[in-house]
Length: 137
Image (cartoon, rainbow, N blue to C red; front, side, top):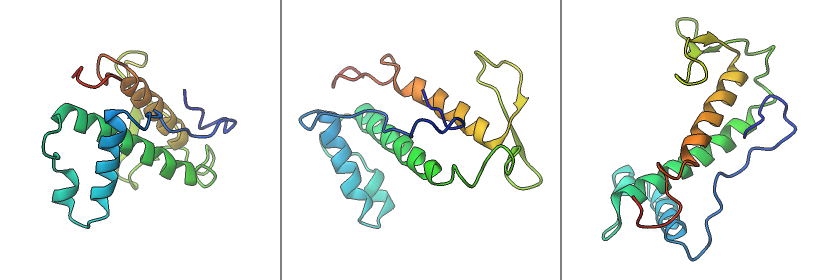
């Protein structure tokens, strides 16, 4: 579980793929395609690959990158400096996951991101959604 607010834990990569796994090889393909400058090529399914595995690997990579980026602003956006999660003055975000929090609640930006990252982490680690073994999609 993430602990962004307590800051006693660092953000961690979600899954460490073994170097001989299919997921690791797909992740390498995804990373290699990003440097081309061609977004169409970067997201295109490589020939002979499973679409669901490609989407899962890219989702995990995106989540890990987002975690790292957010980790760089943890000290800037605190409970005091970011008391609400917003997109400017016109839009505020309220947290609701539909399971534990069924009514939208106003929370600080760091708390909102903590809830969001924990929620996404639980989905990505759910093997019925993101199987660890290749070919189970």
